[in-house]
Length: 364
Ligand code: TRP
View 1: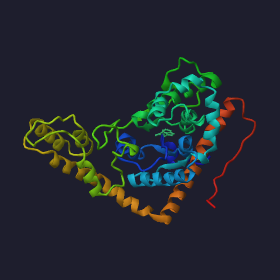
View 2 (view 1 turned 90 degrees about the horizontal axis):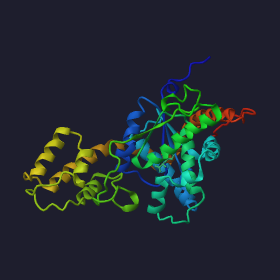
View 3 (view 1 turned 45 degrees about the vertical axis):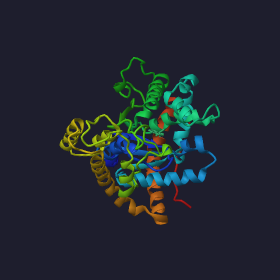
View 4 (view 1 turned 180 degrees about the vertical axis):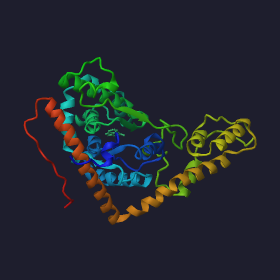
């Protein structure tokens, strides 16, 4: 027997993003920062959910392709290391599409439609009752995205927790139905009890919901209140300057629960300095909002600077080619894992008629 590479001995993590445009600080504190940290200890799979992008933008394939490449640029700039972690293109992992079908049969239709994240999305994206059949299907597909890799952890933003909960239900149900695992089995014991999937846990970032620079809504590209990871220092300064507090003067006692102080806490790394600023602000000890904003902007730009340096390696067409190669290599590794999961799932379901092998060729 050959020794497996070290990567396969580390516990696995899977998470992903739907490519919808540039990543911002909300993504960073919500999940990206966790991913960068966790790649040292875990075997990480980062999924480009480009199939999901088609659920609401099926008539814009060019945009989706561009967004897919751009989000990888953001990931690599943020510190995802392609030597260590695996970047996966969803549409080239056929096991995900196949598992989605099987999992769709284990989830009651009304259970899917009650998923609170889907419901919120239907409202906020104003989908009314005109959304495609594929739209709610993505939530089932997300169970397959995750379980194809049999991970222990799924680092996500707060808004994704409902999806992970549904995924956990499917994971339990599959092992109960096809592998006779006792429904009373405790979550951590599923594999020991003969189940196929560990019951994965969501890992939410240190700030579930970062307020945007409008000081009101959650940071979001579509609301125009985002600071992007690619923003240069002058743009950061301008945007931070917009955070509204309503405070009139440097001597007025301020509310340290306001939007500006969410940024102070999120981005000024020195805890003693944060405590000092809070204390002086609360007492109105001659400390103006403008001063605090300048400090916040500087801290954010210091965080983003190394990202901009790394991003420079991926500019232009040559950069695109490098990125496509990162995706291709990753997807090849990912298929090895996902195909094995699918084979085990099919065996459990009485579908193990014969074996198949997939390959991922170079782009033409
Ligand atoms: N739905 C997630 C989002 O919009 C993206 C996603 C797709 C995902 N598949 C996943 C996240 C699997 C975690 C695990 O952000």
